[in-house]
Image (cartoon, rainbow over all chains, first blue to last red; front, side, top):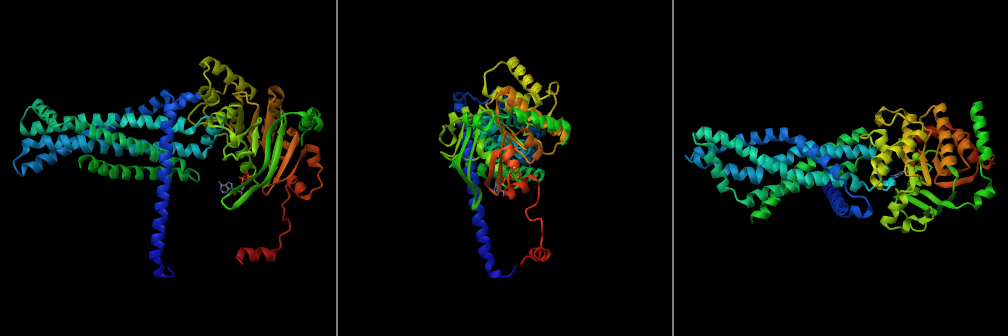
Length: 269
Length: 285
Ligand SMILES: Nc1ncnc2c1ncn2[C@@H]1O[C@H](COP(=O)(O)OP(=O)(O)OP(=O)(O)O)[C@@H](O)[C@H]1O
Ligand SMILES: [Mg+2]
């Protein structure tokens, strides 16, 4: 460091440059998003429809094969919430109201968020790695020269799959978490499990469920786009693939947490 | 050069269309004063080039001379500039999205490293353009793909994954994919690089066979002088982004231009290195 006085300038310059690069990436992501939707809606007109089989394959890969781990996570979260609720409400002798907090926080927060993080780590990374490898091997160029639109062929199915599977996973996580929590709570409070479920259904409004599923869908879009954008920005060889894969997971999770907060703020105001 | 290669070259020499005959044929590629820069660095200068129907044009040049950049322009991987490049009579820069897709169905490209889809078997790779761009039935696609695999001496290997192929098979598979839609024009990037002489010579024969049997025009980017002599009707030599020579094989071969001869005989431009100058450059002043 030759001149420490220059440092603040350097820092601001760095921040500025990163902001511009970040905005650039967001613009790129938006362009890809709209192009993917465009091809989904109008592909048949160019005689290049988005292949349903390909979307199904992605749905299997991102959704169905994630079920075991999703179930395990959801059950654990349900138990954790039950334990914590009973403990904290027990301080006031209000254990019998535990179902309220559990139901609302599972459906509105935990299910979409945990599924988002799980799928970002599991599928977002896979999307980025696949696309990065394909770019490096010139497979994307090959598609382009064949007249096969790469966005239509590679991105649309992934986007469709995640947008459909994320709410399904979140819904599944809702059921599993509430069941797991219910089993624990009713055992601890020596109540019937049926009564617990009835109370839960009473307290949950349709709006709460939609709030959670809406977020899950949004997270699906985020995971798909971050994976695709990072994958297509790859530079260098195998090392580059590793870098963009890690980066895509970190960015997806960050964006999911931030979007979650913004979504909650906007829809509860 | 082996005797076989010599005779093959002689045979092709005899088959070569004469200059007069070439001139009467339709132009399948027309490049008109194309310039290109990456940022501030200009890499193509005023490129004018035409390729005739049924012709094999080999583009040669040293490393970094702009061959790949030119090829990427020709196949539409670089933004097309209106009035600069015509493919099969169509101005690439003036086409609508739909027309550009239509045009791309009529050309085929084999990339240097094959660019086969690693998640699909060889025959799925070859069938991909058919599957995505046509409404053919599965059986018909199978037949067409197998035909093309056979042309490229790959029959029986369709079930293999790209990672199980040797270098030569990989190139032939990517050529099979490039010709599956029966294009009028194919582009091959460095078909013989990384192959031993026997395999590379077989690939030359394949290229000649394609041209003769399917009446395809072929543009080949190559480093391999012998292969160029064997297959080319005309050779274009790029040097630092400029066309140094573009002529029939004998004319280029017998060119009196020193730079052309240097390139053909792989002589370094700066064969004589001045040791003091060299040391000074290393020291950075
Ligand atoms: N994406 C790019 N950005 C900036 N410069 C580039 C890019 N691609 C190529 N270049 C430069 O353009 C020049 C021509 O490159 P090109 O790849 O076309 O050469 P080439 O003749 O194909 O070389 P080689 O025989 O080594 O493949 C080189 O100096 C290269 O550094
Ligand atoms: Mg090159």
